[in-house]
Length: 405
Image 1 (cartoon, rainbow, N blue to C red):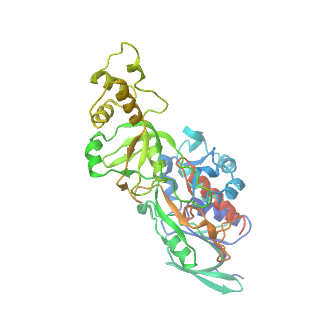
Image 2 (image 1 turned 60 degrees about the vertical axis):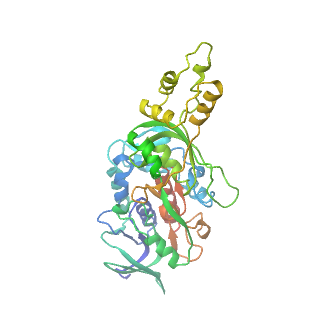
Image 3 (image 1 turned 90 degrees about the vertical axis):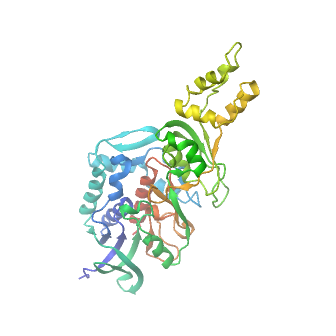
């Protein structure tokens, strides 16, 4: 008879990836222990998508992810697609809808996704222990185990350990660096963890210029002229056409959150405030009125009035000659700022960076350094764009590991 403290698999972290991996392994008749240091599983799921959980994106491709190795995610994403998770959602009769850019949301509460995962775990006979914090994971070579997991509620052993502890984002939801500590304990290297999908802060001068306009929003194309380093041939940083929001401390909104994952401290960002428009063209027509008021009224057709007025004020002396209008047009499509920083992990939706993918098997997420040790989800150096992509990575990486255990 097996010991009540010995399992085939111990999974650390009962978030999206951890629960998914747990029932995938349980379906294969593995004895699975799922450990969660919080009071309940899936706490970050509950706050996602404004409480409705944007659980996947139908347009998911490897190109929608940031990693030092841009090819790493391809295998797992191909093996478990958005259609696979949609089938699971439909199995549980969860109603959902598509919003902008391929994002799928529950019609009602994100609790439905948590309940789905808990139900699948229960049916797969997964042993879930909450209020159980991990103290240490150490090698424990015996005929029935390879690892010992010391926790606040006891010591457990297993043949395999899966680290699904997430990143550093949103500490108030229980985020810690324990996953990175375990990785380095077993000889793994880290790609510097940074806040991702996070609001940006202004320098004091820019705070004075813009932040009394807090709450104003406009459509923009956000871009970063400085690509992040990555292995192999560099890819250009994506551009994002979505909303920009001025806050009391800087910038937010979907376009800013998206580009924040690619931004490097001290580097500039550029915003096209009038995508695909030639704003001042009407002023170039014969007999068009050209004065400061007409200039402002023309810009107000594109930007909120207060933002338009402030943008012109900060553009220097106004010049309504043809060359002057051309300079304004160019500046409008290239509003360039150097942020002071970000709002940090407290406001970041995800953590970029993490366990170096060069040290993991792309098909199974198993460590190449320590057999039986796996890393899945956000703790790995794979970070999705805003809009359901990070959930799809959680499901796909969890399925890859769970089906190989």
